[in-house]
Image (cartoon, rainbow, N blue to C red; front, top):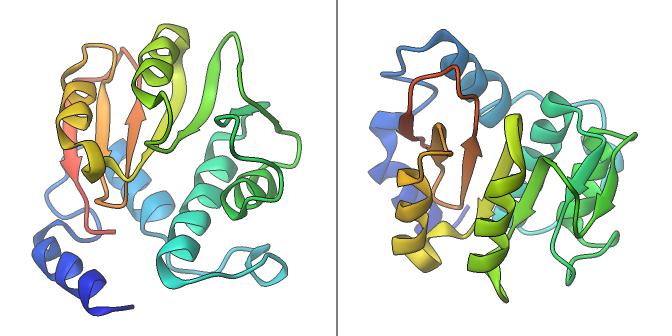
Length: 180
């Protein structure tokens, strides 16, 4: 972990490990999916990388394992050999990677290419169980805030390195800043 990561962690220290989250469901999601520190069964057999990339890849593994999607939507430039998609697939072996899907179960969207239009189009294909991951949300802070404000996005998590959007319409709209 470098100085930048330490500074980010220190600035978000008050948002560690689910502090201040009143919803039991959201608290459990933060504690046991987002900030789970115990090693998962596949970590040793998967490739490694620098701290930030590995930290995100392991989060994607846990999200895939938690959601158990049949289809993971990733943009076209990514392929099966990308570290992020390797971890997403390892979290759920039954899942296939596709660049398009009629419904969104789990979607990873880095802020590259025509990401604005891709994300806005995908919001029309979500249901209550959908999970959308937006990578590097601070590269387009205004767009991230527009996604948080979107009425379809019910629960949002700002992890600095990425954002997670959940769409369960039975829940109350909420935004969390998490120290990840």
